[in-house]
Length: 439
Image (cartoon, rainbow, N blue to C red; front, side, top):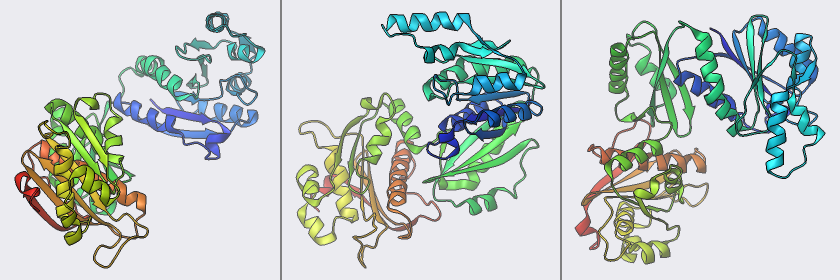
């Protein structure tokens, strides 16, 4: 079965907005064992829309068309589909009743523009939109079913989950089963990853895919009619080849993996951030339930804050600087015990460094980063060097990822300091919590 997507809208075509709907749909299809073969983007021009609907209807089995169902003059998907079919638009009485009730309950007048959303191509099957005013619809043209959804993300996502996925499952019958395992890595370049993996003997039906997004490189094991035992063996083989660079399985970010570990472990965490400026805490609190483990976070961007809030020794900064193992270790210890009279948190993270583009020195050039993690009664600290040619954003993003992976490793009982490949470790040290106040 050949699945395609047509994305409509001048703002998408011109790059004024990023088409997150398309990326989300592709991932959802994979999760349910389907692959998208093609994606087409077309602007809000009636002739272009009509042409692409006709053209793709000869090539695909099911096409999801996203966008162009709103009340404004540039919402042309319904008219274009009617033109492609050679039929007229007709008012859908069922959706008119829904709209009338929707507007009445909100004491809003139902306008002619709103009623435009009730007009569907003759013969179209209405698709309910449970959270918006633009219904979807589906029609059969030539070889393909074209399934229309609005472009508003939260409306689109609900309709895909509740309407489109069940529809394609019903149409699919006995199609090839596709399953995807995603292995998240840091510190391994794409060419190196390919060199390690592509000479290996993989099961028939399994192929490799790669997705790079800062600071990660994701490896996808795409299995088409491969047994569970063979898939498990392939994942084990890939994990062995990736080594410490493998940081998560079937998670898009390290924050997602760490969040689940902390929830499962019923552990507590505190975070002190200088270089990362709150990014680590922000990534974690994006997940519901983070309040169960994240007890406090401090952005100690200046030395005065490190000293007053985190009890870092002024002498430590004078002797070693704020970009030192000793300083970041004291930051982790300080934030873990910031609440007087309360036991220290189970875990703590701290970051400091030089993100650039200025501020570097001969001893501590741009890209010099120090990270510490408290695990039980010990603090593990390391200094890494990131290329100064990298952007400020990249340095901060990679720092947050390494910090979260140090925490992840500590939670699951691995040595927190790992070897990642192109991430250069300059030095590392383990401190006892009891000794940090004496530095």
